[in-house]
Length: 263
Image (cartoon, rainbow, N blue to C red; front, top):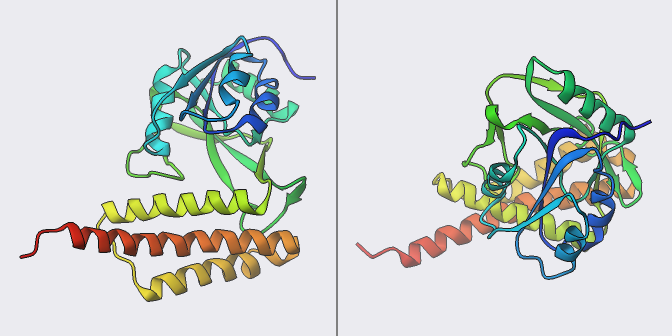
């Protein structure tokens, strides 16, 4: 049974056009003392759905990158303990109880990582490079923030001990082909911007070899083929994101060259 009394946790969620996710997500967060949704000016019903929940504070903030948006969300939280969730993530009753117990009794750790169960539509994705995925989701904001160097797949910088919760977070990562492809392309473009800022270059070999290696590694070495058609699709789209990364990086350098004054 889930412990339903309020705990001093601020649940933070960043959104853009998540009307299909928010009602079921927010309805499952009754244990939280505070829920803050930072939205990037959605054009669907995300805002009205969020405002229908009494505990939700809905804030709109211009999106620059994932790290800055997450840090902005942290700045709006009133509690020290932060639980970050994506709109397509869900807590199991066991994980909720573990989170509540951890926050109420922990005296040692500054942050906790979660393992995730990846869902392909309504089926579990067992392999394809996702089997050992861990991510920071619970932390004390006084001892952690997101580094500004990463624009996507943001990195949490933690001052203190790090723990791992035993119960898994459910990640409904794949709803349909076009939505997942669009997400991986978006991530690829952010990664290109990161590399451009660091003055890294693209090349034909990188555009070809890196995504090919990524696909073969996840599909064969990390057993994606055992996920059947699901594994093939996920491994292909994730590899394509890397191809987009280098393609976009090359375009950024071409644009830079055109705009630079000729010597």
